[in-house]
Length: 167
Image 1 (tube, rainbow, N blue to C red):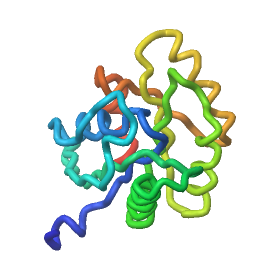
Image 2: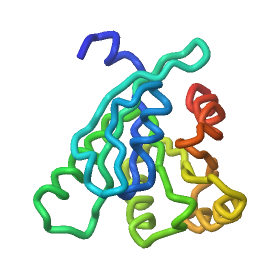
Image 3: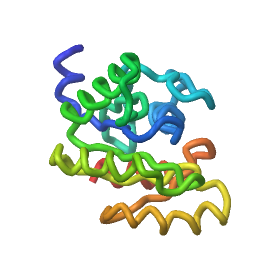
Image 4: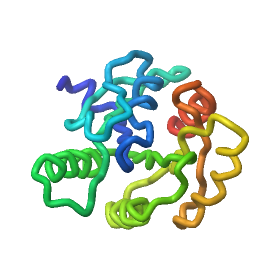
């Protein structure tokens, strides 16, 4: 990694499996670098890219889904990679699935993020229909200050997210 890349702010995308972290990563970096699949566990290692928004550049890191309650060695390794991304990040995007609503694992991940003492932006992904928009309010039960609705697949809200990141 070059000194220039290390100097750029790092934004980590974390959350449960299949919440759309890789789709959001691809949308932000403007390529299809990250594998996107409906099956959980496709993203295993951290994947880095650069996002150019307005006149600013920042690095983005995609991670595999946080599986907290597991003894599976591969899933433990994925979780370790996600934790490293959080530790190295200047800002964390906690990606949630608005379609699925709040899951028990989301509460556990919020607690880990609070302990990391990093700035966090909650991103409600998969807000593709009016019904999903109505479910965004449920995500506030996680005790997050704000939840930004986006549809990474359809690029809705992603520019606004990038505006917030560069602020």
